[in-house]
Length: 268
Image 1 (cartoon, rainbow, N blue to C red):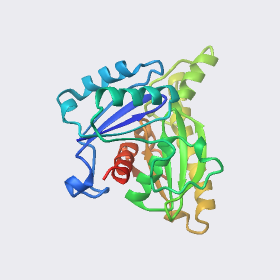
Image 2 (cartoon, rainbow, N blue to C red):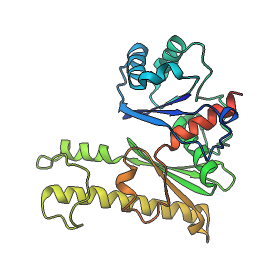
Image 3 (cartoon, rainbow, N blue to C red):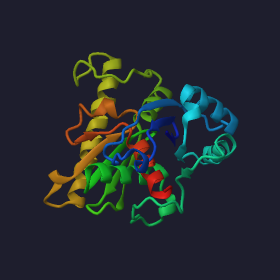
């Protein structure tokens, strides 16, 4: 079984897949995660602590891992990730996504080394699964808008503060505002402070997404904006997809599926 590991600023997400397509006969479009787990990111975590947590979550599957594909957007944890894999799974083929790893994604970006590995992997997965042109909206610590050409190239995008960052900022900076549960209020016009906050966050972010997607699509495919595929992913995507007018697909395991594709391209 292939273990995929996506270490982000807020969460670490694990996924298990049947091993690569050469063994299963399944195409990239057919492969879905058999199991997945999510835990909070702690940038101070050591390789041993990470391994203890990962092996604990995997349970009986820990001894069945035959390959590892991973990435980290947290530099300190990227080092610990490499140590963990070398120490606890030394015999297994592995791919850690960083410069020099084959992804098959042309990067039309001024400085490709600035790009987070998750954005590149998401581009690969979105283009493989849905074609292009496409926009990936990744709802995480930040909300990432990654733009994919009709040929599968990464063109760039936009970055905005994430929903949870905004919730925390409001609660911290405004004396009479509190952290609220991110659920849909009764109406856009909030009848209480809690509902007003929920309305501003949920509908406000949906409006931000739709506004940016429409502007990006107009530049990406002038006159054919409706042909642009918009794929939502990330831990908070489920909150926004019902309110957004532009999101066409929801793929919660987009990054994990992209990691599986990168593994296949580098391990034969």
